[in-house]
Amino acid sequence: MFDLINGIPLHPLVVHAIVVLLPLATLGTLAIAVRPVWRGRYGPLVVAAALVAAVLCPVATSSGEELEHRVGEPGQHAELGEQLIWFAIALLIFSAALVWLDRKAARADVAPMSPTLTRVVASLAVVAALACAVQVYRVGDSGARAAWGDVAAPRSAPAQLTETADRAE
Image (cartoon, rainbow, N blue to C red; front, side, top):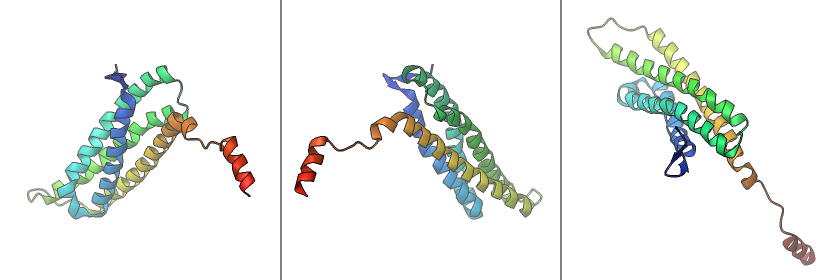
């Protein structure tokens, strides 16, 4: 099902969306966690980015499994990639909780929220954001190594260039 789009593997296309959206949602979550005044204005955008990234994680996993049938086992990348959804969900939950707490606190007809609860949720949001950032890096690094490890490996200089350099000295 999640294999090709117009002859191009779907996996790298979806992964690029996640690699942009999840770090943006991570930075946004950090921002709204430490700057409460930004929650009302930017919070919904942060939650939307986290939601789209979380929805795309299973698509990336499924398309990656299809790609694996074509190119072979990606090693640790597949295992790390399957774990990313849990980090994305945690980020989504805590960013949404911050926005919800902010909106609830802004309503006049509701009892005031405990500032301690908001601080605890903000602290957990920071932890979730940092953990998510680390996991995105780990998944991306292992994927890049699986895809490009042989291509980007340093090559030795051609024999002719080495001999010419030796004569010049």
